[in-house]
Image (cartoon, rainbow, N blue to C red; front, side, top):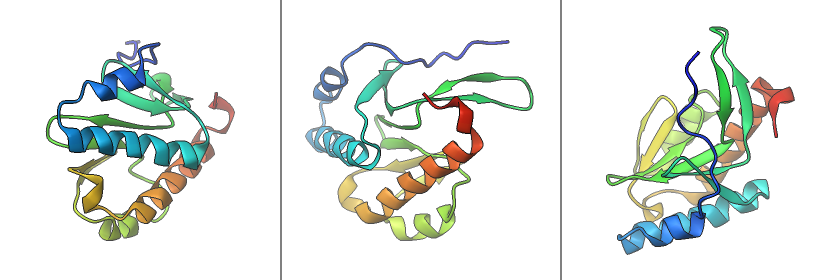
Length: 142
């Protein structure tokens, strides 16, 4: 079975965010960290070279593939900030309609800036995402 490429590291989240050249994206990332810390009460850590994650859980699929993943995560990519949230949490589609300017695919939501989205809706999305993951993997949380 293949091993996951993205694992938690001891790299500095602050150093990673401070290295972002785009000042708006840098500020948004620090604001996003504070928002998520308030919602789940945990400090961020780096996952791989470019993902900021909070907490973790162990998953196991019916196929037998298993691994560890951050409970909530984001990455400041070149085109947008990528939010890693489940594609199946309660009211996801309803919240996406109210979120504001974004793009999405299965488990990712892409935003250019926090100014383009409704922060209260994002908070609800994070809460519902966490609830969904904890229901799927109740015994596997860190």
